[in-house]
Amino acid sequence: MSRTLSIWASLLAALIVATSIYGGYHFFSPIPYGDQWDGELGFFKDLTEGNYAVFWAQHMEHRIVFSRVLFWLDIVLFGGRNVFTIVANYVLLFAVALVLWREYRSGHKESHPPLLVVGLILGFLLLWVQAENIKWGFQSQCIAVYLFALMAFAQFSRSDNRPLRISLAMLFCVASTLSMGNGVVAFGVMAIQGVLQRRPIRESLIVAAGGALCALIYFHGYYKPILPIDPAAAHISLIRLKFFAAFMGNPTFFAWNTIAAMISSNAMDWGTWSLKISALFGIASLAVATVVTVRLFAKAQVTPYRSFLIASYGLVVASAMGASNSRWMLGLGASVSGRYTTPVVISFAVLALLVLDVVTTRRTRLLASVAPLALLTFTALYQSQAFEDNAYLYKWKLAVLGQKIGLDHPEYDATIYPASMHDWFVANANFAANYEIGLYGRGWLRDAGVVKFDAARVDQSFCLGHLDATSTDKGVIHASGWATTAGRETLLIVLTDAEGKTIGYGVSGERRLDVSKAVKMASQDAGWTGFANATEGPISAYVYQHGRFCKLP
Image (cartoon, rainbow, N blue to C red; front, side, top):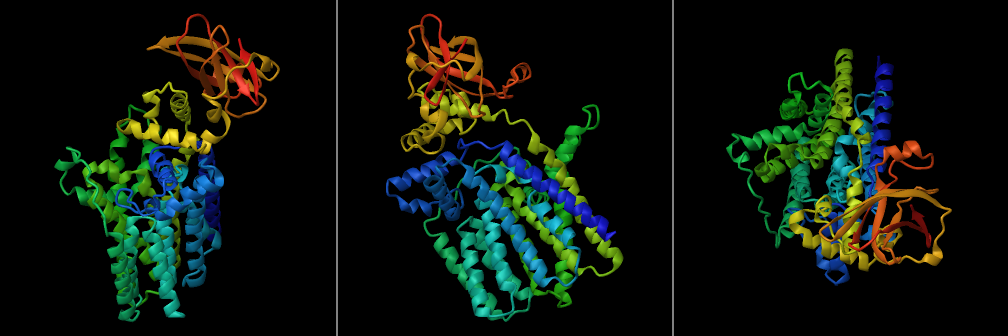
């Protein structure tokens, strides 16, 4: 049976890791999204103006110093194209998995097949339910805060060279705090870890004192963000407790919705159960963790390894409590936000490892292996979403194109930044263009608004395509068609009037399955849309590539 479970775990983990990595590729865009406009570009803008204090500035409740270092590196060393920050998200998740594996290898009491243990660790840690934290380059802090905290708990659990271990543990707690605000709580959790291990009380007092000092520094000049209260949330009884329970089972919400989407609309509305299912799993997880921890402590069986696992789970509980207190006003739906999935999958992984380490009979060992594998299999249903349609990314291209060429389309801008703060988007986009950051420094977006049509550089040998339609709305021409070349890069389309004067630009990347089926060399995203200033007479469209123009009939 152990062989079967090992194969099950390893194959499932391989599937999860492969599909989650593919998902990052599939949904990748070099265009900043959401908080990246002010949190990365706006942050770098402040740095260029000499405001280095912005490293310490609040982002909501958090001081995301670690992530800001990554943002700075992304722009300075890698051009700000989002690749580095997204790769960093994967590296951080694998690092968490490595910490769990190393602690298991060095401290487990009950031995289990390595493939089973590795499968559970990698499977939970790389689940695509974390898509928001994986595919968005701004989210590294949501992973780093737990990585550094787990490293702290690992150091604190060691019995050798206590002064060094405690010093390193507190240093990692500081790093956790510099990732997100809930990192401050890691000190308190670690102090409790010392009590569970029955370490000398002075060690827990030292940690608590260090945490108090860190908190004093952290909260100096701090302001509490005020969030509007959802009227519906104000009338939900015990909303904080319900929020907490749903948070602790967060990933199962996404898996259950995947099942609901597969069921016929004539069946009962399974989707309405999603929050309840999430809360039930959250309560079950907390119940198991509580029972195991209490029994281990009562029997003086909390080994260093087990204390590490309990502390790791405890930090997730503390984070859930913090989120329940600070986000309940957004409604219960906020409890299953994608950004909250990472701590919960960590809690699932460490709880599975903890239970595996305390079971001894053949029957309980089997149950302790099958239960987390079943949960992992259920949650992995969401991996199918890694293959979902990514056509919305094309609207992001149109947003930055329109703004760059002076024909802004707020309806597209709203897909990458809140419409209520449109002026901030424009200011940060102009800054990125001036400093040639990311796409603004190379390729089609750099050339948009700059390249002018030159009849002497027309070359009809390198493209196929067509100008399909034009329409005029509020003094702006909207043109569309399709284009393809031997390469697969995004193409800039230059629009001209009847006299050959450049009047606008377009960009390829729109889904055109009809074209890909009819034209052998065309990709599925060969479609293009462009914007131009209104003009009398017909317009022409040209593909611009490597200094040459190719007319689209």
